[in-house]
Amino acid sequence: MRNLFIIATVAWAAGAWAQGPVSLSLQQAMDMAATQSYQVQGSQLEAEKALAKIKEVMAIGLPQISATGSLGNYLKVPTQLIPNFFGGEPKTIEVQFGIPWTMTGAVQLNQLLFDGSYLVGLQATRELRNQSGKNLEQVQLDARVQAAKAYLGVLAAEEGVRLVAAGLPVVKKAADDAAAMVQQGMMGTTDADRLAVQVEEAGNQQRMLQQQADVARAYLALVLGLPSGTPIALTDSLQPLLDDGSAAQLAATPFDPGTHIEAEVANSTLRLGELDLRNKRAAYLPTLGGFINYQQQFSNTDFTPGDGNFWFPSSMWGLQLNVPIFSSGMRHKQVAQAKLSLQQAELNLKATEQRLLTDQLQQKAVLTAAQESYNTGKNSLALSRRIFEQTSVKFSEGMATSFELTQEHSNYLQTQQAYIQRIVDLLKARVDMRKALDLF
Image (tube, rainbow, N blue to C red):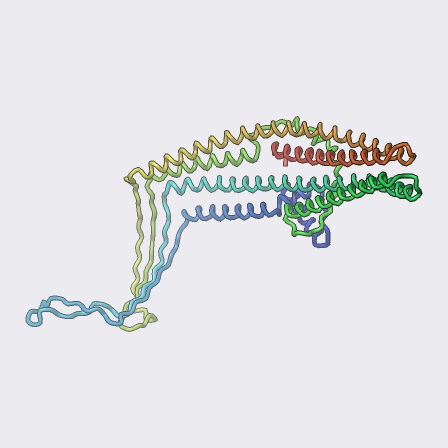
C-alpha cells in the first residue's frame, strides 16, 4: 500500500513538473527522494544486479544444452607406411586411410544431479534477495533524511529572510526621518549616518539569507533527483512543522535496536555468513552429473552433405561422479576462513545494536537541548523585537538617540540570526532522531 502511495505521489509530481514548478509537501518530497534520487536509482540498479545473480545461480542446476559442429577437408590425405603383409618387394606399402571430406554435428544435454554447494546456494539466493531489498530500503531511508533536511533548510533560510525584511522598514523609516531632520538642521550627520549604515547592514543580511535559501533549493533539487534549476514550490509552512506535537514526543519514543534497518542488514549479513560456512563444508561432498548426446557424422570422398547415405548417427548417455579426496588442506582452510568471517558478522551485529542504542541516547539528548534552546530563542526574539519597536517609537518622539536605535536594531539582527540557527538545530535534531528511531 505504501509503495502505491509513493508511485502515485511521484506520478503526480512528474505531471506537475511537466507543466511548470513542482509543488511538494515535506512528505511528498521525502517520498520522491525515496523513489528517484540518484542514490536510490543506483541502489535499484544494484538490486537488479543481485536479482540477475540469483537467477544465474539457479540456472546452474537446470538443464544445460550445447551444440557443436565441425567441418574438415584434407587438401592432401595423409599417407602412412605399413608393412607389406603380402611379402616380396617393397617391404612397406603406402596407404591412405583418411577421407577427404568430414562433417560432424552434435547436441549434448548436461544435468547436475547432486551438488551440496548448489543446494546451499539456492538457500543463499533467498537471503541475497532479502539483503538487496534491505540495502535498497536503507538507501531510501538516507534519501528521505537528506530530503527532509534540505526541505526544512529551505524553510529556515526563507524564515530568516522574512524576519529581516519585517524589521527593515522600521529602521529605514528612521533613517529617512533622520536624513530629513539633518536637512532641517535638527540633527547631526553622525546620527543619520549610523542609521544609514544600519539599513545597509540589514539589506546585506537579507541578501545573504536569500542566497542561502537559493542554494538550499538547488540542493533540494539535487536530493530529489530533479534537474538543476527546476522550480520547486514548498507547500508546507515552517511554523506548523515547528509546533508539530508528534515531533515534540520523539524523545520519549521507545526504541528496539533489533528492528532498525541497519540491524536488519547486519542480521542478513550474519545469515549469509552462516550459509557461506555451510557452502565451504559442502565442498567435501561428491558431485554427480548426467549427460546424453546425439551426433551425426558425414564422411565421403566428395562434398555431398545432401546425400543421406553418407551420414552416420551415434548417441550415448552417461554419469560423471567427482569425489574430492585430498586437497592438501585447501578446503580445510576455506572452512576456517568462513568461520572467522561468521565471527566477524556476529561481532558486527552486536556492535551495530550497541551503536544504534548509543545513537538513540545521544540524539535524545541533542533533541532535548535543541528544543529548550529553540524555546529560549523564541522568547528572546520576541523580547528583542519588542525592545527594538519601543526604541523606534521613542526615537520618532525624540526620546531616544540614533545610537540607541542602531544598537537595539543590531541586537535584534543578532537575535534573529541566533533564532534561525536554533530553528535549524531543532529541525535537524528531529530528523536525526527519526533516523535513529527508524521512523522514516
